[in-house]
Length: 631
Ligand SMILES: NC(=O)C1=CN([C@@H]2O[C@H](COP(=O)(O)OP(=O)(O)OC[C@H]3O[C@@H](n4cnc5c(N)ncnc54)[C@H](O)[C@@H]3O)[C@@H](O)[C@H]2O)C=CC1
Ligand SMILES: O=C(O)C(=O)COP(=O)(O)O
Image (cartoon, rainbow, N blue to C red; front, side, top):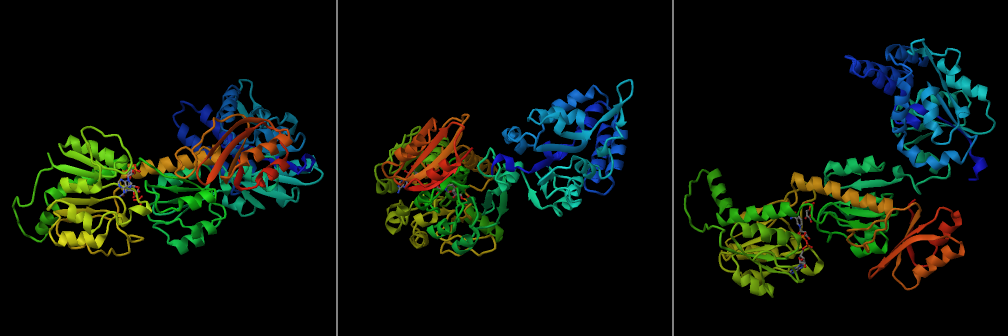
């Protein structure tokens, strides 16, 4: 849209241009130290609301509020300073917009010129374009009321004001209150946009032509220049599997729309719900398959709110330009503590002892019970969990042996063992902490159990498919193993209402837990903070640090436009991108490319001036998977 096409834009001040109501704030300042401050401020707020939603007349609301205020002239500079810090986020973000349309933007408010003018002046809106009330004062400087000759002090004041302005052409009104809507109702504006970033008034929303949760949304709908490339309120987040509520809160604070599903979704259900979703949050149960990706038309990122990512088709995501993030250390300690408790419980045969007591049987005996001190613990998979367990187990006096397919730093006095089979023959306790990559399927079967020492204890807190469960059940039934703890299963119930079936049920000295290795308050809270932060950093700045499937890159923020480009990793794409930029004389301020086996990821910062066609051309560079303008 060319600039001259901007309709006249009438913007309300209180709770629209700023997050707050000016008079409420003034009351708060004026009544500092007053014994009834809370009550009076509360009464003023209630009167503001009644006026705004139309339940009492505007002039009555204003008169009664000013009566309660006890404000003085010297309070006004304090109020202005306060309001300058409380301009609505999306207005601040689009500061550049206002100066671009001189003569087209009016602030029409039933608030007061004394505090509105200086706040909007910072955005290039001149005093002539502020239409508002003015205070009256007594000789001592007390605010006594308002100038009654001002049309805006009366009922229907905004309508009358617009009538007097007599604007030619299209007029749009953006506001949160009933009086803003009334301009449209009176036929003096073509469109009324209910602005809900700060407050949502049902009576106003119900009558609006459009409801805009941010100024970005208003600009986007009207194809006007905006700071963000896309309004955040259009980003839809789908969170599954009972993710801790902090995640929802953080995404909402960012301005995203969030949908929550308790429990998991199977492939068909997820395919049916993924359309339009930009961010998908899952835990260990939800499979993100190629079919799901084929149905995902908007997906930008997947958050695994856990450690394991074997449930996600990482390459499929990559080829579709979908970045995947997880929480690689947030529940590590919880799994370690669970493993440790299981080792001690099984060494003392607690499952059996407790079960018998519940049946009324007193079986005091030391048979089959041992201390863990001095025992040999075999850790398979010496990653984050394996190494943490190594440290804690040594503190209990255990001797640690480990086996890992990758070369790992030995911690403390842990002994590295060259092969899995060698390890199995020497240790008293075997605990699995490998990841769930497909090649680890049935890593542990009859042969491995047979190699373990008679009476040894076995733990699986990694992934269900890593262990051949019938082989484990057979080794336990035979009495070859002294006990087992299993937290993860090849098939796990989708929700708490589905029954759990397994050959391991009912076997002696076997602890079965419903995949709770990471299910602690601390871990879930940490995860719910960590993953949204990574995803929002990616969306806002292109930073892929700690992504599990994207090349990890980060450029410092700079005063620039940032373009991110994801392409198939074939030679020459960067050169083509740069050719497009060079042909259009666009200066590159910073650029970073990193590739992996499948994709290349480039962040390019360019200086401010570019034509919209540039974006189109970059989008059409051959081998492009995804292209986004970040800001
Ligand atoms: N029960 C639960 O609730 C939880 C389970 N987990 C599972 O634990 C796994 C491990 O977690 P982290 O230690 O954080 O991962 P990590 O990636 O730091 O460590 C895994 C280690 O296993 C090694 N490894 C892989 N395959 C192997 C094999 N066949 N033989 C020997 N070593 C092998 C890797 O080289 C790596 O050092 C996760 O991938 C997840 O599946 C994680 C958290 C909670
Ligand atoms: O972190 C992991 O990998 C886990 O296995 C924990 O998964 P969950 O979040 O409990 O589904």
